[in-house]
Length: 264
Image (cartoon, rainbow, N blue to C red):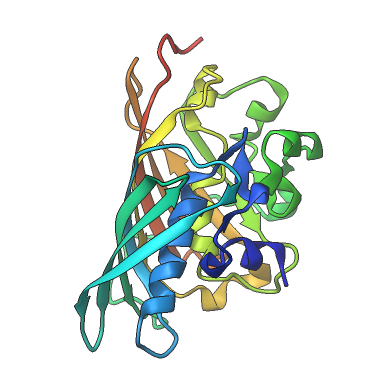
C-alpha cells in the first residue's frame, strides 16, 4: 500500500511518524484522519469529505490514537458527523465533518485560475536533507515556485506567501484525501519574513471544491497566503488547483505565534 494511503487510514489507530514535523503530527494530516474516520461511518456509496472544521487542543505525537465519531445528521445528499481525536486519554482535536460527493462537472461560475504557473520541472525541489525535520518529504514530491524557492537557501522573499506543486510519487493520480493534507504541507508562510518559528495551529477549516479527476500526472498546484502576522497570531489561506487551473480545495487556519517570536 502507498505510504500516504496507509498513513491516512484511521482504522489503524495511529498518528503516523511519516507525517509528523519536529515530533508532532501535521495539522492537515490530523484533519485528514478525522475526515477518513467520518467517511468510514457514512452509510453512502463512495463517501467523500466535502468540508471539515477542527479545533486543536493539544499536540499529537507519533503513536497510538483514538478517534470518536458520532452522527449529527444523515441525509440523502450529505451527512454530518462530530469527531474527536484522542491521545493518552486526552482530547487533542475536535471538529465536524460533512460527507457527500465532490463535484466532477465544470462549475457554473468560477473566479478564475492562477496565473503564470510554471511547470513542475521549472520549480525547485525541496532538499532531501529537510526530511530529517519534515519526514513527509520522503513521501511527497514538493516543488517550490521560483518566487518562493529562496526560502530553501536562506533567502526568504519578504512576503508571507508560498506557491508550488505537490504530488505523491507512489500514486498515479491525486487521492481526494491528499487535498486535505496538501494545504498544510508547505513550510510556514512566516518563514518568508525571516521568522523561522513554528506557529501552533489552533483552528483549521477545509472545503473540497472538485474531485481531482483531471489532475494530470498526480500534480496539485498549491498557493498559501497570509493577510496578517503579529506577536500573537498569524493566518494562512490556501487553495489547491489541478494542472488545468480547476479549483480542487480551499483551506484556512489561524495559528498562535510562539512567545517572543518576531520577523527578522
